[in-house]
Amino acid sequence: MINNIKKLVKDFSLSELRGGMKITAKELINKKITVQYPEERTPISPRFRGLHALRRYPNGEERCIACKLCEAVCPANAITIESEARDDGTRRTTQYDIDLFKCIFCGFCEEACPVDAIVETQIFDYAFVDSREGSIIDKAHLLEVGDKNEKVINQTKLEDAKYR
Amino acid sequence: MMELWQSFVGLVYELIPWFDGSIAAILIILIKAIALVMPLMLVVAYFTYAERKVIGYMQLRIGPNRVGPKGWLQPIADALKLMTKEIIFPTKANIYLFLLAPILAIAPAIAVWAVIPFDEGIYVANLDISLLYVLAIGSIGVYGIILAGWASNSKYPLLGALRSASLLVSYEIVIGFALVTVVMIAGSVNLNDIVMAQKGSIMHWYWVPLFPMMIIFFISALVETNRAPFDVVEGESEIVGGTHVEYSGMTFAVFFLAEYANMILMAVLAVIMFFGGWHSPFEGVPYMESAFAWVPGIIWLLAKTSFFMFLYLWVRATFPRFRYDQIMRLSWKVFLPWTIAWIFVVALMTQLKIGPWF
Image (cartoon, rainbow over all chains, first blue to last red; front, side):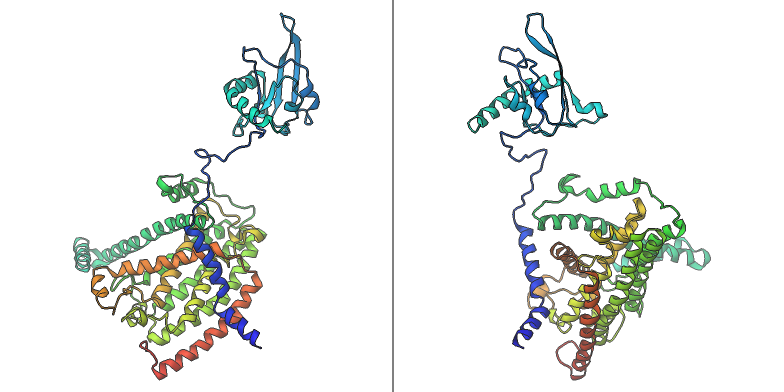
């Protein structure tokens, strides 16, 4: 009986509704947590696996020796490699394509590479707008990404090295 | 201000004397209508902006801030987008009814504003039955929604229209009874007279004796205008978008305008009925009354109205949607008995002359 009356008073005084509205009113003046993306970015882990890049040695020679381990380990068959012997007798790739539609960004290629040639960078906001062919990035593009971001790649790999 | 308007009216009659001044009279009415509708549409546009901002803030976001400084041009961008979009007609839909529906929705929503008094003597029309006019014309708006549901030739809009019709029927009664108590105290159905009857102080306003009625009126207004937490007519998680599913571009925008115009109307009505219309809240308070005497009444009316409009957003940001049968229960088993009981309470209070209101 007394409980019923209590419930009646509680119901008709709209106490729970008022409680809910108090919370939203409090949040109205609280500090906002929005990160305004193009200007502000959330921090990214050094282990983040984003767009691929092919690296070079400090003397400008490309690292990749066309061992095709990445091609073999790739679970999505996203990598296509053709190789040939160069004039100086070393084996180099003539074609190194990654299909970004197929790629699942697992990072196995990076793990498999014996010379740390193929890496995954922290770049995630790339976009291809043209047809399906636009999703396939070739060797020149990969090397360009590597050249542009060599400093950052070096830094993140160093940071991550002690946990491997 | 009033003298200026009177002299302007006289000038118009003098310049256009044909047909015994009937053309001049039509022109004056047109000017009045434009002076009312244009600001109303602007307020609707910026009310959507305020809605997105306030709800964003309550969810710890910052809302639109890209178009113009702080996103002030966002409603304009939205309007441009909706105007340039294609209007898609569903297959085998009745195109005439399909296009008539948004017109039927917005025409009453705007027509109702004709009798709203904004200040002493500032109104488009002063009807002696203005409250009845508001209720009558206001409920015509539901035909627009029902017709939209029927003419769309699609199942979700039809379901939305059914829900809308039954909700409107239930809550029209509740709103009617809640406003009857106001009429009983004020002794008039003229909105001007109702506001004038609340003259005195903040304690003379009708929210004091009619506090439960005010709550019931506001909640019913939420249902009438299909606002969260009672937006089962749209119910995007249940019936996609209700009656709006098949509408795109400008036809959708017209529905949108009608809905928001109705929301603002309900807010103004709440202020006129329960919060003393254009009367200053400092009336009867020594010193404060004279300090705020320079503020025109329309400012007070708009300030109180914006509080109720904010309440709409606040409620929407807070509560989850009601289930359909729960809304029905609320209407028939809670609100209706309460309003009827309160009518008798008010009748007793009026007879015994309790308080300063009667």
